[in-house]
Amino acid sequence: MPLITMTTDFGLSDGYVGAMKGVILGIVPGATIIDITHDIHPHGISDAAFVIATAAPYFPAGTVHMIVVDPGVGSERRAIAARVGEMFFVAPDNGVLTHILRPFSGESPQAEIVHLTRREYWLSQVSNTFHGRDVFAPVAAHLAAGVPLSDLGEPIDDPILLDLPQPRKRGDGILEGHVIYVDRFGNLITNIPGMWLDNSTQWQIEVAGRTIDRLCTTYADAPRGHLLALIGSAGMLELSVREGSAALTLGTGEGTKVTVRPIDQ
Image 1 (tube, rainbow, N blue to C red):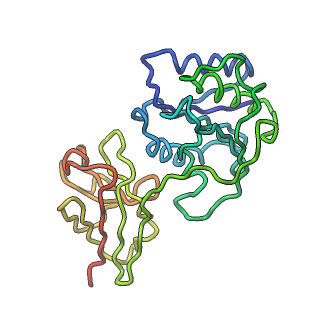
Image 2 (tube, rainbow, N blue to C red):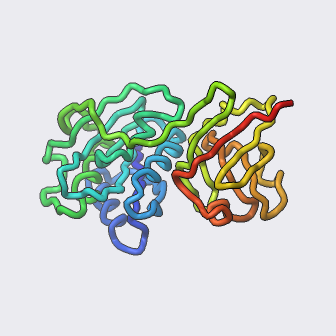
């Protein structure tokens, strides 16, 4: 059964999401359409890149993921589709696939990418302001129906990747990174991989002028309202406030520097 996911910044107040689903079902009536989220903040390319990278691995082979966070709609920016492993992605070429094409693990996957140039796979009338409906939705539907990726456009090897700060291991054992995503609960998710924090070492985390003296295992390990650090579900170091918001408590968000120091035993 064809499976297509949708990740957008459209919200649900307007008819945009419904229109895209209508286009898909008009081409593949039996498709299953899954909403990953439509609550990416407007124009939040880096947020969408994080969300799709953390959600996509849990879908079955052959899934087509459509991501429409597209502040450059109607401009010269390219529309692309990619096959990465056994999954497909359809999106604007604006960096929203950064973590798919350059995973947090640092291991670059094999990817086949095309610039969507074959207009016969689009709607006949294309709006300059709604490529989600007129380009991405029909392309995603055709992919799900079995149209080969190579039929959709010309191959490219230079997709746009976001210039994001990279985590660093210093020679003295100190880890440096940044907050790369703030979730609905105000948790600050960093780009420091959890695998870098050896369980046999005691760590001290510094962020926004505050110090956290230990790494927790669960949110419940800290008293209510207290700042804590743990390895979150994305496998990255996460800063949280139990039953509160770390973003509000610290008055900070994406781009904030985080330093992790090993404490001498």
